[in-house]
Amino acid sequence: MTEAAPGQVERYLDQKLRRGPIHFTLIDPEKSPGTAAGAIARRAAELGTDLILLGGSTGISPESMGRAVLEVKKAVRVPVVIFPEGPGSIAPEADALLFLSLLNSRNLDLVIRAHARSALHLRELELETIPMGYLVIAPGMRVGQVGEVDPIARDDLRSAAGYGLAAEMLGMRFLYLEAGSGAPAPVPAAMVAAVRAAVRIPLVVGGGIRSAEDARPILAAGADVLVTGTVTEEEGAGTGFRSILEEVWRARG
Ligand code: 1GP
Image (tube, rainbow, N blue to C red; front, side):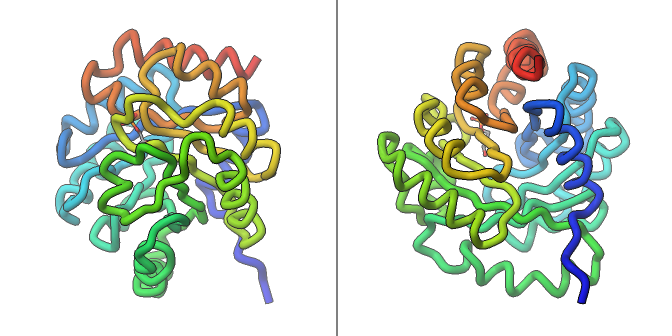
């Protein structure tokens, strides 16, 4: 019997993470369709983002996801990875798909059932899947609502650490702490630090990171990956975005 070995994108991430924290740019193909997604991705990659995530909205059609994947792949050399909202988000041309289990959802579809329905199809497509626990922290924003989540309270460090460690014990290879896209404040640094102290797998943190001031304490608390989406959607890959990337480089030392 062979072990399920990490695929190419995961090996790329492992190598990068050995040198310190990294950055993912999230682009929503409904808000920035096709070539618009390609243009944002090109600029973000020129400024040094390490990976492009495509997803975000509810109701992304397979067509718009497929078109965005192709345009972004034309524009950048960094991996292009799907951040799915469901089986409709699968685009075989992507380099990988985050195989997210929404750990604190009340809806079993989002914890494991949708995964069971798409697993055989994903294997047939030979699309790389990256096993990731996805934990929504208050306020949770839209993903908290559509994900039917019981959000982790912002001061409940023990629950966050418990979920994180359980994900690791279940064999998930990444943990994503999500405050929700457009959250008024990111996941608290104290929570990132508590989870960091409890788990060994790489810690992805996103939602509400809009400035260097937001990014700095999260990186200092031990986040491995910062995800930003809204900042590039609202301002393009401009100075705010650049200052976040500079914090990531600084944390790399
Ligand atoms: C959302 O964590 C990501 O899933 C990014 O959030 O849009 O707030 O940057 P923002």
